[in-house]
Length: 116
Length: 112
Image (cartoon, rainbow over all chains, first blue to last red; front, top):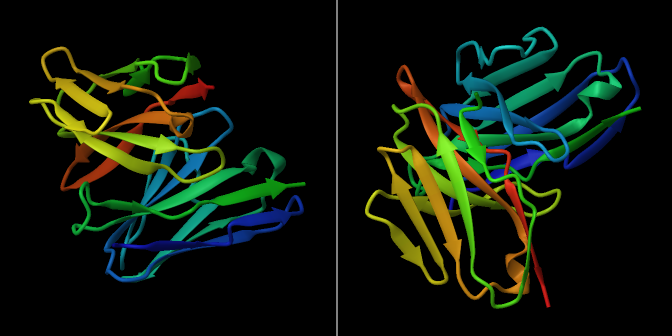
């Protein structure tokens, strides 16, 4: 079945630094990928929709200059958390649109970001 | 009002019990509906899609009522391995694209 690889699975960084998270579709092409964030005991919140070859669409309240998204190829989308702060500590999950699966979406395994 | 609202939980039940989760959604234009399961610190995994006619997968039965914008999940004969958070998910269509909107989840704990 469709596989989405997300890397790294866990990262600890210092406040003020930037962190890049990669999301790759391994056996299918994903023209659309989605980035979610989940705080403890909260639901997954959609941050942005990443479209290959064009600018990402951000949800209301998500700072596009802080969360940089690049979807330069049909198999790779990256999320860069710039100038990270402790309140950015969260579980970040990507999802790719795959028409071969039941509901068309396959999730990465998530990245747990801790900013100290 | 949140787009997808679920029972707050947690549900603590003994093995073998039957448990039901409820969910409501606010956008009447939503087109597809799902239940996902999420284990602690893991990504969500699709449990089953939900159809108006109702659908069953083993011990799991899902139901959709479009008129009342209500979704349910019934788990019969609960197993210890059913312990997880169950997420009600709606596919929101915006323009030419769709994306998944997640409920907050209901935590289920099945005890021996």
